[in-house]
Structures are given as structure tokens and as C-alpha cells.
Image (cartoon, rainbow, N blue to C red):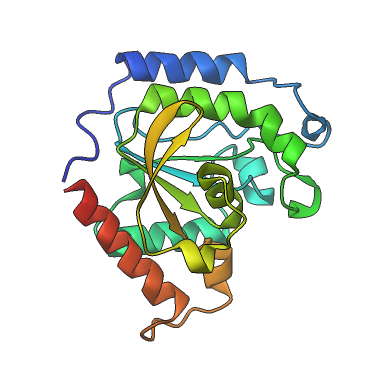
Length: 203
């Protein structure tokens, strides 16, 4: 399996990501700037090969400045590591980089404001696979209104922002927190299956 070759900071991808991070450190492109504490840019090795895209930062992420660090993030990390995929081998970001009030879903306008940054991240990373976490990023990348339940379990080749991508949707861990069963067919068990298939794809 090839996920990351080095994680050094001197590669063109790493340099491009750092330039983006600095450029958007005080982003003022949408009203979310008013209530945020952090611009949660994302983190992970620039040569990861696997890009995980969530919805938006929550309260914990806004405090830490890091994506998926709350309860949902800890569950996601546990599921990844349980299948042999350390979080540190994945580049993780969100559709929008600032926390929406009361943890609501980001609006179309907020996602549109953040779209150039996300597109630039994807272009710099050139991932072999994009894993979309939950309905919001899945619908955005696949240009569909269908829900995650009907879309997960498969790989999709799609064009997004002029780039050819392979996308694999998975349940959002906040949904999994409400049903922690690993019984066959339960969401956690299905997500573990998804992760195993992702690893096989990347092998």
C-alpha cells in the first residue's frame, strides 16, 4: 500500500499547501469569519495519496485549529487505525474551513466561498482517492442530491473543478456515534468494510 513516501516539507505539493495556508490564514471571504476562532485548513502529509473531506469544523476543531478532533474525529481515527490506517497517513480537511454557528451545515454560499481553496488543495495534493465523509461533501463532489446511504459502498470516477477524481463516500462519524453497534449491516460495520476496501484500492 502506498499512502505516503515521506511527508517532508520541501516538495512542490508541501510548498503549495503552505502557501495556501498562509494566504487563507485570515480569510474574509464569507460571514463565517465573524464567529470563528480558527481557520481549520487541514492537516496531513502532502504526498498522502488519500484525501478525506468532511463537512465543516465543529466546536472542538474551532478551538484546536485541527480537523476531526472532537468526538466524531476520535471515532473516525479509531475506525481508521482499527483497519491499519493511521490518521497521520491521511490528509484531512473540510468543505468549509470555518465553523458554522451552532454546528449547522454550511450553506451553499459558504461552500462556494471556500471552493477555490478546496480546489487548490486537491490540485496540490493530486490524491489517488478522495473519501467524502457524510452527505455534504459527497453531494458536492458527485453533483447529486442522493443521500449517503444509497451512495456509500462504491467508488465513483468524477470530474470536479476540472480534475478527474476517484471518490469513495462513507458515513459521517457523527452518525456512527448514534449507533455504535458493529453487528453485520450496522453503520459502523459498513464503515469498517468501506475502509478495508479503500485500503485494497490503494494497495
